[in-house]
Image (cartoon, rainbow, N blue to C red; front, side, top):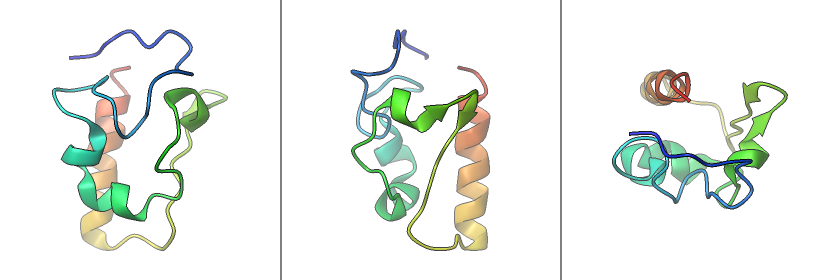
Length: 77
């Protein structure tokens, strides 16, 4: 399920349920834990046609697979 977010300035990227059935911080909790911008809005993460996800450290192979899954979900938006 994808909800309308308008300009995204009032939608918490990780904390609100706007793409899928649960918030990204639940579905991708390990990525959320290492996200540099845990309180960012959708508008702040969406930058010039790209999703700007930044993490505090390099991703393990398992986290890379999770990030690929998250990016697949974001392609539906």
